[in-house]
Image 1 (cartoon, one colour):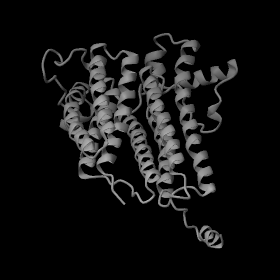
Image 2 (cartoon, one colour; image 1 turned 120 degrees about the horizontal axis):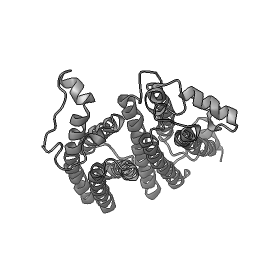
Image 3 (cartoon, helix red, strand yellow; image 1 turned 90 degrees about the horizontal axis):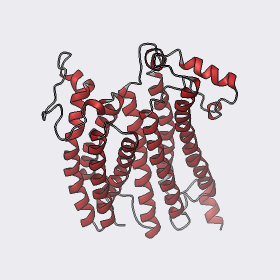
Image 4 (cartoon, one colour; image 1 turned 90 degrees about the vertical axis):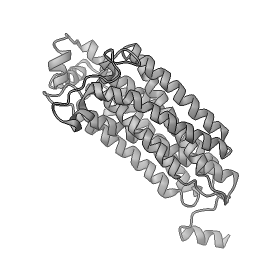
Length: 355
């Protein structure tokens, strides 16, 4: 008993047998599920053009929506100062009732972000104070917490990029940073949970390593996710409502007058084309990864990867053919998040190490 007390005083983290890795893993997966929901709500917020409806960032008091007519009018008056209202919604005859609809989705998106922060920070503090966090996991959990905070900051920078009389939408670059940070956090939550499940099964298990295959497939998927965010931010999904051809041809007309770099980062037709066909490079990489995961003995990860990318391809094509129908596009974004989780599972399976 004295020796154990001495270890705690010296700051030595409890061993795996004293910790509760399974409890921590289930907690992290629950937070990961909230992040997936957050991505879906973010998709609704973007598709309903709601993202600029709240023109201030109030991390604490912003959790309470307007409660009186005067407060609602003040929020609406603030929205009237930006380009989205002055150039689009104002001339279209937006009413206060219309404004309340888009306000609801942006407020819900921010509120869910706050709830995710609490769902991570409070249990983390409880596990930490109870002394049940396994050795070596505290820095990783703190890093995940920091990523969550950073996500909120990036979200505000994204919104701020559209708060001017010249802009009618947010920067597609900030949109991609905001989304990719969320998906990277999701992958980190899943990976850490899987490490903890391994530790629960075998107290000598070491964290999985990121292999060259896992890194390569992850980078290929990263490019596709970035292209998808740019397509969303530029409304480039509307560049074509046919598949596989665009404008009756395989390669669409693009604006090269401002140079190749501008075209590859701003032209909606070119970005739509790239997102459409880079998907098949992603599929090839995922098939290789899924086979490696199956070979490593984790068949369920292989099934999850195949299911996710197969569903995602069908949803992507349907999104195009329906001219970006709201709920199809939301499902496309939701399954994209699930694909990230499945990919993290496959890469973790390949990188598992024995004691």
